[in-house]
Image 1 (cartoon, each protein chain N blue to C red):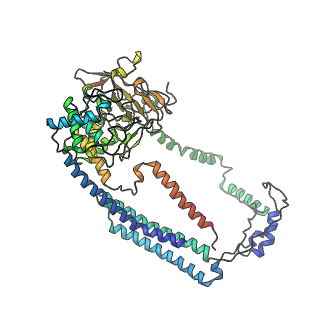
Image 2 (tube, rainbow over the protein chains, first blue to last red):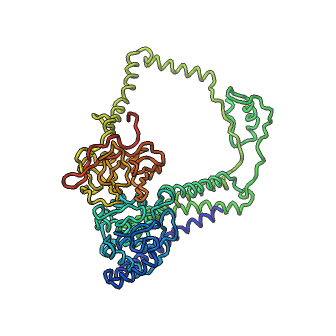
Image 3 (cartoon, each protein chain N blue to C red):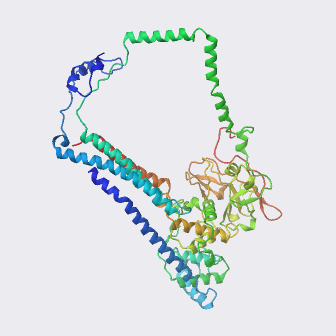
Length: 264
Length: 356
């Protein structure tokens, strides 16, 4: 029996190499796909009257029930005056809006609209009153200073979103979502507009270059494997402790049983 | 002496003396003169390796294979060290390096351990035996001889007679650790009162509120509603004791709708148009309280979930903290920058004995 379990152990190194190879291909490929999609979304002309009219129709039929026909807000939803295109692009582009139901916070859902429709609604909301615009693509390339971004992230973001961007719990069912797999545009817009319970980080607090650096840091963490081995969800001592208790202690107990059993 | 003749391996020979010893009870024995008869050892069961030479041969092979595997593991770890060098700025290289060196070393150590245990369990002689514990007390002659030796040493050295030498020796041994104690004291604050140090921070009248970590001063107009700014006092980055000062002076700056704030009469004028500044150091055990929910205006401590209500002067509404977060009184200077009116009006952070 001891022989067989040793054989299983010996397969591990190769399995890990294979896993790392698969992980690299998937993350690298995903990154390439993702950077080409960000380039594609920025093509709609936000100022054309045709786009704004299209956005007004979409708004009236999908959003106005809660936010009011002229964005003034109702008992069921906040006013959208001054929220800007960035807010619309974030809320609709991540599927948080339209809201499926009242709850502690709007959940991420499958996106309900095409990129063109989202852009049209953003153009319409921005045409009613000025507000934060959708960020320029040059700030979203994740080519800034990752070290500076890391420091800013640890000071401003890590207490809610976890130091590796794995997310975390807040009060009464609310939570800070994980930041891996989120488009750079949406990360930027979230900082700029402060969706739901997230505070606003305006350009005087974190300059556009600071925001670019933070995105660079997040993408660096996302696309580089952890030098310390398995991340275990990046949740820190809870996940690591659980792993050590179950597998570490389990192995020790198993060895102890074998050690004290009389040979047959 | 009887116990010297007891052999651990040959149990049959030592049987009588073992029984005898177990009946000799010492003062510490709880049950004296038990009626329960010593059942003796269970019958010896031979192992398959004792009965079947083929099985023994097999176990033999397993043991030396494991030792060879251990050697292979060590060589593998050496090879991995050379094959996967750590390259600057490449986490993949670092990961592969530690992974394969670790696996090789683990195989090397586990191989030795498993082989040794398997050897002992399957191949070494496994006859049961009893090592009878010999009495701890020495014979009277040994004890008398020991006393004699001590007496002789005392006489020859003069330890009891030359009292001055003896006492100075004792004094020297006592004095030796004293410098250590003083050195440890030197690790703490020397010329300052610790209570005073804990009671005050860098903030003083007119020090500007600046951004953490850049130190750029903040204008009241920079702060939009729903914002949270992480603030350090002006000049902190130039301080030599940066971390000590930051640990006390870190501040969280938030802007709320002024109509939402409930301000008590004695704190009138401590905030500016809905901008409030609170100490970031939790009053429970001093973690940085920085999880701000901008819609509920709750501030959370990540360590023990203490929750503070910013609307009601950072009152504790949940968790183990007992006191609200101290508020930093702020105002706007002539250039529009936010400045402190004074230091905090109470010590920041967790309780300490002398805190009034």
